Length: 80
Length: 154
Image 1 (cartoon, chains in turn red, brown):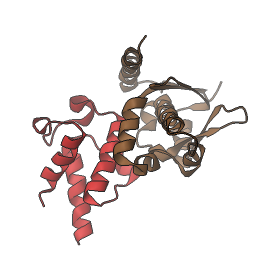
Image 2: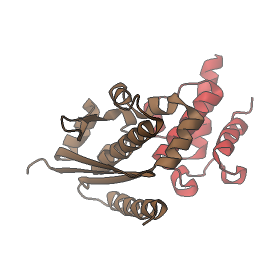
Image 3: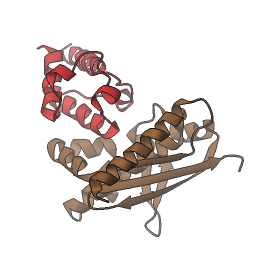
C-alpha cells in the first residue's frame, strides 16, 4: 500500500486537489484548514486506514507531510 | 447580514486576534470563534459519531444527545466554537491543548460553564489569567462563542 497516495485519496474525497498536496504544504496557511476541518481529516484517516490517532498528536499536524508520516507510522505499528 | 457575510467578518476578526497572539506580550485573555453549522453538519453526516466523539467529552455528548438532529448539530457547533474561543484566550499557553481539555457544561440557568482539564487549568494559571467567562450564540447556520478571562491579580 502506498500510504502517501492513500492519504491523497482521503483528502481528495474531502475536496482538495492532488496538485495542492505536497509534503511541505502547510495545512492552515496553504489549504485554509481550520481546527474543525482538521478533526474531520483525522477521523477520515482513522476510518480509511483503521487506525487510532492520539488526540494530542492532532495539534502537531502542521503540513500534509505530517499527516502522511503519522499514517505511515501507525500503519507500520498495526502491521507489526 | 447573511450567514456567509457573518462568517467572513468573524473569521477576519479571529485572524486579527491570531496575529496579535504571535507578537510577544501577555495572552489576549479574550477569544472568539465562529462555526459554520452547515459545514459541520455535512462533516458529521460524512463521518458519523466518530467526529462528535473526538470533539466532545462524555458529559458534553450527553448534553447534546436526543431531541432533534437540528438541536444536536447546533449543540455540537456551539461547543466547538466555545472550546476554540477558550483556547484563544490563552494565546501561546493554549498550544497543545486538545478538544477534551475544555468541557462546556451547562449551569442552572442554561448558561455555558467552561470546565478545564488539569493541564488546561495549568495553562490558564501560566498565562496569568483567571475567572474564565463564556458566551455562546446560535443562528440557524452559525454558532459564535466569546470567552474572556481576566488577569489573575485583578
